[in-house]
Length: 122
Image (cartoon, rainbow, N blue to C red; front, side, top):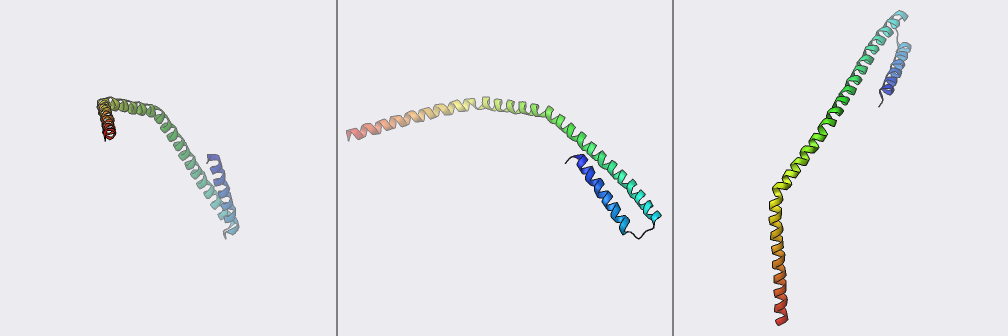
């Protein structure tokens, strides 16, 4: 939501509330003027507070975005380094497993050939 849309809605709501109070109050004119003046002063303070909060939020988001732009590449590099280190540390196990798999495949081929030869003899 844009800040200008929010502020426009807030102002419109305030004006509507003020008009409703003017028509439904049993106060005298001077009392109403005093009330309206007090309410408008209060609304100005509240609007200034809202503006301040929006400014703080904007600054916070800007700061967080800047930090993220700096930290994300570092994190990616760290993750890449960790993956490369893991790959190097598991390379010997990978080679050992590949040799065992080849040995098992050779044994299976020999076994199949032996079974095939025995079936031909029988």
